[in-house]
Length: 439
Image 1 (spheres, rainbow, N blue to C red):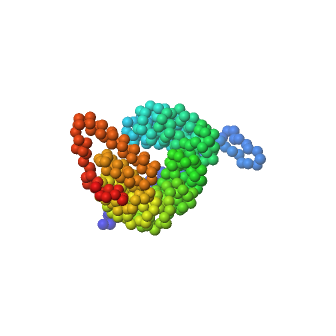
Image 2: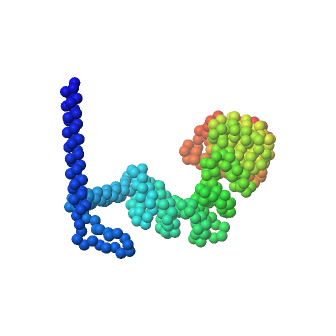
Image 3: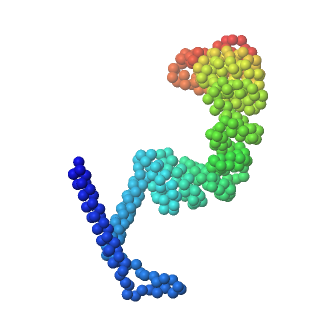
């Protein structure tokens, strides 16, 4: 045991001695190098100490030279990587895989420089025309408008058809997010329509403003003339509010001008609620006062319920107080129910007293059954109270009946018109119009 310990101590002593001698040699070399004198020292005036130029040993110069070579290799590798990356983007911009292609466009247009925009335009022009490139078009024009909306619109005006419409909306949307006043001014200045005409540029502008200025977007939409542009803008704004919550949509609808816009908003809310919770939508309608809003909302709720269960929907509508809301809701029940069981629908209608509020539901019933039984349709058409509506509906039935007769005569060569004229669903409606005796 002692021998092992002595051997270990001897080896440790040798190692220490070797290390000490090596360090002394290094210190000696460092001292000699520091004692070298410079033949012409540079004197710096102003009381500063003499500054000596730094010398580099051959070994350090060789090391730096090697580093430079390594760095050059690294730069070459980066350059090659960038070239390969650019080639890869170019290939993906024209890929037949829409996901790969969209990723390449997004990657390129994330930094919408003049060169990247030009490259994206070139790639877009090579894509097949049609809906398959609409997504790339939206991405290109939206990104372009972030830096040069006027330049983007100048290019868009060279497009045709759906390409132009989609690109225009995308540019105006992007532009309005950054500077809505400038976008509005440009839209007014560059619209060729006359006073009171629908300016299509405002759809995109309102869409962009809705992201950060819902009040301003709503005011702008409310000022538009009645028509398709205002309708599309209202739909966009409603969807924006609904994404933020039902309470936000309700508050938005409450503050709209009374009339068509407010009715539209409440109808949209009612439809959303009915699709999620039909019972809550029905309760909401039942608690409303008899107004245009109730008529609008109840109509949509009745349609959704009647699609699922027309019998239950009919019972709910029948329990409503007589008025516009019940009349509008009856139309939707009749439409859905008559397609499945016209006989039951006729019997249900026959329980209500004849008056002008029943004219629209009856007219809807006539249009649903006239294809299967023009004779019954004519009976109900003649029961309409409003003379103008009745005359118009009777004329429609007569024209349709004449066409049916001509077709049957050509097909059956004199076969009785009653043959092959069976009703669908529950068969030929047996119930007559309100106030008539059953057939």
